[in-house]
Length: 214
Image (cartoon, rainbow, N blue to C red):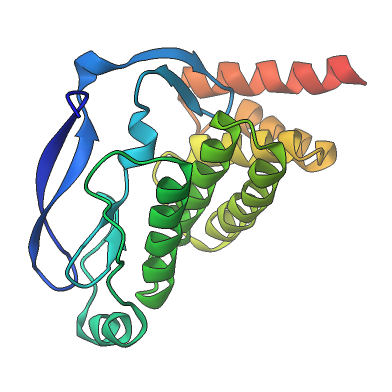
């Protein structure tokens, strides 16, 4: 447990105080970062601990969630129950996936932003990739693609617009949807409103990856 420390939290739904594990920065080192930002680490991977599960009510959330309003809290109370499992210690693949699925369920109940749902699905895809399960990865990449697409089409307040477009291109590329990948990556390269030079460079590289594979 020396690689982990307990972070004090307050549940956004029931307000109960609890603790959840995080990874000490000194106890892991990044060994690889994939082109969709999936991070591989030596030691515990912090990605497995990004989602918090309240032991009192079972609510799952991340730092990007909004506190649910009263009607949503009522829906959550009716539909969500506490787990018998302990999420406060070390997490394996099963616990990490289960935590993110619970957060997605809560996000649906409180009508959280689609961009948040997309990121939770993408993280599950990463979990499976880290564990070497390509079939599981593909299933959740497709879920992430769908929610990034919805966010792109409906959310007029997306932050990091260039990153979202890039991820749409890169996820489509990984799923073999080259035509859509070229469309989104080209938009990143050519849209003058996108000023993130790192994202533009990565989009050009992925564009060339596709062209080079033809």
